[in-house]
Amino acid sequence: MLNPWFFMSLVSNTARLSTALQILIFLPLTLATLSRHAFLLQSLLLSIHALIHGTMTLLWGSQALSVLQVPMHPFLLLLCFNIFSATVNPWLLTAADWWGKALVYSGPVFIGMEGMSSLLVAQKLGQEGKKVFEMGESYQFGMLIVAAVAYVFSAWWIVDSYPTAASSPLSSTLLGVALTAFLFLTVIGFVMRRTNIIESSSLALFMAYNVWFAPLLPNILPHFQTLTNFVVNTLPKPVLIALLYRLTILHLASRILPTIGADSWESEEGVDDGWDDRPTSTLTKLLLTYRQSIFVTVYSHLLLLDHSSQIWWRWMNIFFTLVIWSIELLVSSEDDAVADKWKMD
Image 1 (cartoon, helix red, strand yellow):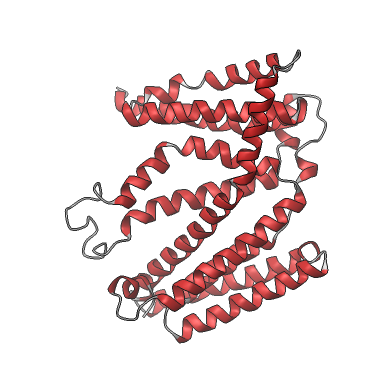
Image 2 (image 1 turned 135 degrees about the vertical axis):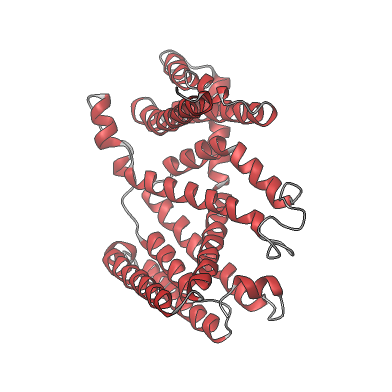
């Protein structure tokens, strides 16, 4: 006999997947077939719905909410198409414009969150790598191979991306400065015993990813004849990759944050056998509760970026992360117990 809890979890997870796919398809569909204003209005409606859904989840917490929200996205899509099939109310256009400005101005926030989350995940990988190193020589050899593969793949990725990344004298200069700064910080970290090869190689992959500037605009607004053709050929793949990376890195960081604290290394459950009272746990709970709102806003922001804008935002991401890493390497106290456990001895 099928377990009711298992059945409800299966239905709830299927509903969440359906919701994510609807958002992935409906936003670029509106942008491609109607107009920028229609896209912004659709994004605004989805964001408002996501906030309401997150608040109800926070207060109620029932898995049924995931199922009940599935029809809302097609309804909002049809509503948006209906609104723009005739003369649009000026108030709606004004609201769409203001929402577009909010998305544009939120760019630095998204970049900062992505950069800090990437650094946090890289440091967590370095910490886990330290544990593997302590398991024996064979494990050390394996981790050295993994780090070497990451370094080599990062170098190949950067070299392969160089013709596009260094399309102008300024871009090539920024690339040289970024690589020099990364190598310098890596050496400083090794000398000061504040980092390890796992953390460094992870950041090398992060840099290579951000140097990779795939064409964005041609994938956003192509012509299509059927919805199937749209799903297969038109979905902006570089945007989806950037969205996947940003959401994944934010999710991983939200899971890591509760483990960081003055007593977080005393035991896995903390001093009080739980993390519920920690500020980082409250932040994590809010991030996970309103993750659909973050999904919609991040995706909408990425869809608004043209190729040139995406390039400069990625350069800012690279240098912001390097600055934060340099501060972390230089400011960490040698007698800080938490930092000592976090880093490789």
